[in-house]
Length: 510
Image 1 (spheres, rainbow, N blue to C red):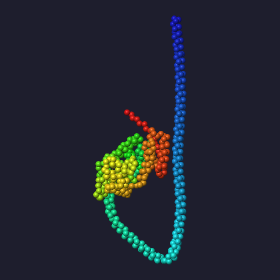
Image 2 (image 1 turned 120 degrees about the horizontal axis):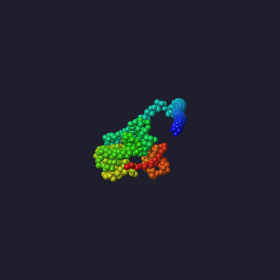
Image 3 (image 1 turned 45 degrees about the vertical axis):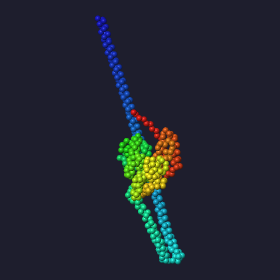
Image 4 (image 1 turned 60 degrees about the horizontal axis):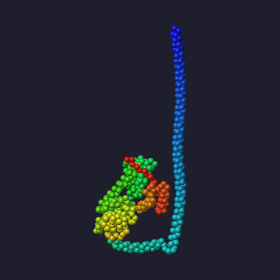
């Protein structure tokens, strides 16, 4: 019984102790939970404070940025206003100066008018005194002087009448010469060629003014690449939907024009595309040269020409002489020589053939030294032309004495075609020769790859081989070319010498 009682007591004590321990654990957990809750609240408050500070800082930064933007705008506006004020003040000063100049001129004019009036009075007095003195010296009245003057005039009229009679007799003697001229005039009337002259610019139409920006490219890279590759000057100004290409070399200008029109129609404009289109344009112009030679041969009625002569003849389409297109000039000479040969009973086919080929040497005279007549005769001889044709070509400028009627006719037809009104312009030929001389001066230096005269001869661009010319050598080369131009050429203003050294690395992904 005692053991059951002890067990019961132990059980009760254990229960009490367990209850007390449970309460203690619950209280400890509650305390920890409260502390965690307080810590979470404190963290939340700290985070909220941090976010608040960050928001304030961001707002301050935005306010500062807005103030800075406003200050920049204000400065820009102030600059614009200042510039406008300066322009207005300059215009006011210009107007004031012009007003002062006009006042001075008015004063000078009024003074000059007064002097003129005074001089007129003095001249009238001097004339009256001179008449009195003449009457006193000659002892003649004005009526007597008039009578003597009329007698002198009558004598002069008689002498003039005798001169007219002599001129009439001389005119009769010139009748034979007039009949000879009829043949020439008849030939000219039957040809009746248009007046033509070559320009140094070509106008290219563009679909919209937005295309101008694409042609220029970012920081001007497209227009620089176009001018360096083609060797022509691309002028982009405020003219709506129009750009201008300028070059003294007609072949180069035609290649540039075709390149530009192809790029505009394609729409893809970048340096690599420009180079690709330029190569295609060169091939197209070469084909046009061949077609021009064949068409000229057909129009002149001259057949069985060697293919190389036809190609050389086609190159004359892009050659000018004092502004006159040489291919058109050659056709005119062929027609004129043929008509005159027909009137005189000479060999028409020979005259037309020699007339068409007489300026053949002008297509290659920049490659071979010597007069173009001699160069053309050598070329014709080399490709199997008859000796009579070769002789007419060689003698059309008097380098060789003409020994046949056809050679004389070719010489006369050449002079007629060149002398007609509007056919030639001396200034353009001199201008082209100066630009060609500019390029020749630069090309004579070692390491020069290409040379282009730009800006109407005010700039020369020299592209060098990067393997041969270093950056330091390029500076020396530019100076040497400039000094040589100063020593050998005469030109207005100054000429800019620009040496370009460009290295390219090319590889292919296969």
